[in-house]
Amino acid sequence: MKRILASLAILLLVGSAVLADNKVALTVNCNVSGAQVYVNGRLAGYTQPNFSQLLAAGSYEIMIKAKGYPDFRTTVRISRDPVVVNAQLAAPQPVPPPQVFSHNLTVSANVNGADVYVNGNFAGKTPFTGQVPQGSYSIVVKAPGYSDYSQDVVVRGPMRINATLQGMTYQVNVTAANVHGATVFVNGAQVGPSPYQAFLLPGSYTLTIKAPGFIDYQVQINVNGPQTINAVLQPMTATWQFRIPEGFLNRDIRQGQSRHIQVYVDGVLQAESQGPSVASGQMTAGRHGFRFVIGGMSVETQIDAQAGRNYVLEPFIGINVK
Image (cartoon, rainbow, N blue to C red; front, side, top):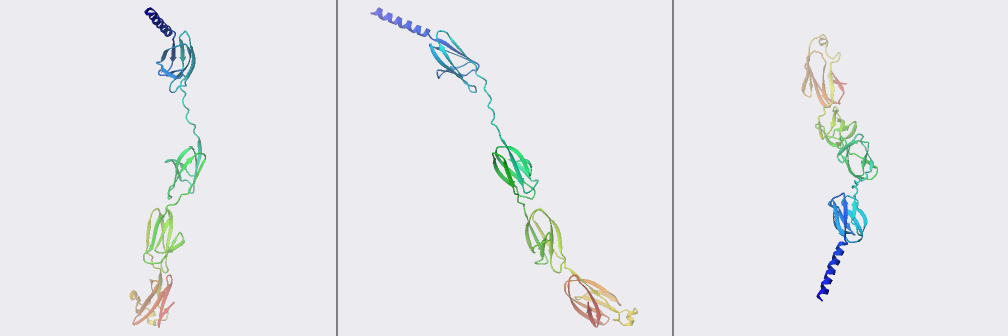
């Protein structure tokens, strides 16, 4: 019995040795170290740069993978002789950049020559046309004297922007300090009474202030910020002239003998002479009192003077006003 058991053990050992001896070496030569080697779908190891493993007889699917390289696949048949697989992984192909499509971007504005900015960068002046890749953009249009125009757009095809710039206005205050309700004109157009307030675009303007009996006040202003104009209107004046007509004085005076003559306007002495003479002066529009002293004779009168007129005063037995 013992002899039979010993014989069986010897047979088992011999069978195992025979089975072990039936495995054949599979060698993978690879041009990439660290590539993964799969045998029948299972990770068997890594190339360093080669890989070896004993396999029993049979058919096997071999796959070698490496990041960035196309997979290498083959099928081998294991029988009695060692099998060598030469896996030459192809060089990784560069990934082509995504194709970029450009489109026309057109910007027009109600102000020619306005500056166009695309994503904060100066691109040109209106009217503007350029090409931009599709994507999101911030468009700003600027011009002196106008508020900035801005618009965010997404360009997926030809894009047109029509910018309407709003002019910046500045406050202008106009007063006629000495005449309330004087009429204000801007560039020849009547705009209202004083005190007057307006919001004007930047630029040059002719400002005129008128009031009856006053000389027109006119000034050229350049509006580039808030302004206040305080105008003092000068009264328009009338002129007066005092003369002694022929025959009014006696023959002695006409022959050159003197007689003292004084002219007063509103109680203020305006002229004084000895003998026949002509006196003249100016007066504002309105009522004025005149007094003439000729020797021992005094004559008075009043005139409602109108601006721009000339008044001639001649004494008779009283005062003749022409």
